[in-house]
Length: 424
Image 1 (cartoon, one colour):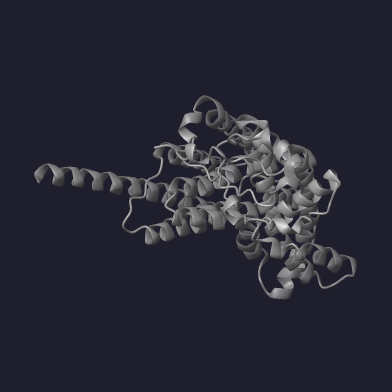
Image 2 (cartoon, helix red, strand yellow):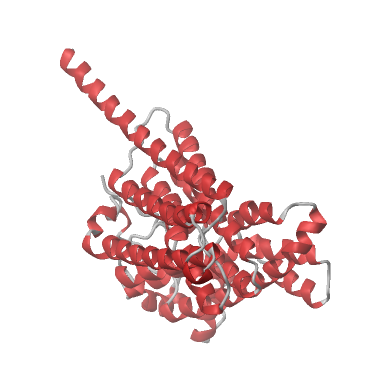
């Protein structure tokens, strides 16, 4: 069974005769976007066409107003956008650093969802391959930018905890909630998913786990090398070599998904969504994407710079903030979307969101941070310490086991139904 795609875009805000120019620009994109597993579409709402003034005669100005309406007001998280200027004002006027941290976290939530939306819009114009690569790069842009700023400030523990928390959050919180809510909402229906897609992601997660275990085992079982080289130096070298292998494996996975075995990841609902098209133009989406990425970078700098002050003010450890709060903020749209798709009995999409995001963090963002830290001269390795690596291993194994049991129970149900049908 093929996997499904969450392309449920709503063409709000582009209506009427006054929008012909924008419709012409978007008509070139009247085709399906790549098979990316993004959940931001379910958090979108129809924009109010009355917000675009009918008396605006300049086509450029009318298009700018329409694009602003679609990008800013086209999400249910738009209520959180005021937190962005408030965070900037709090920093300029030297408010409490805990306030800056809290407002920056709130501002990052809608920005992460809008980046996913803009990536989808660009994907309509670029085709499946380029769009898939763009989604693979921007899918976890918030976590990546926060990690890069933390590396720049030599806060290695924040990088490791936040990336570990992203993987745990996707596999435990998101996937667990999706399976539970989907099962309760569809008690009298069959829930199916594509085993091949789940197996590919599970194997990649196991490969990433192996690359995390090697430096840890070497640190506990290794000894100083020739020339007085310490175990830490060899652990760092092993981590960098493992990171290169992980990045190569992820590139092969992208080629496997987008080129050689694309049919395995195509949606069954493709025919139902052939009428979808981009709601803003290519260059408009690109400019908005660049602008929002810069704002994410600014807020990420605030978050990294004030995390210690927030920890001290709130009485919460930095590890808790990094493992729990930061991943929830960065993946809020995907978290909600995965559960909503599960409620609609679209389990393939929920698995694609949760497993795909966890795979991207484990096999792309983590090794990329190790390589970037190597370039910066910062000493970051893949050794996440014993307890953290144990939690990661237990999470990946229990996820793989749960999905396997879920499928085996489904096959058992089909076998019993066939036996009962034959017996009757």
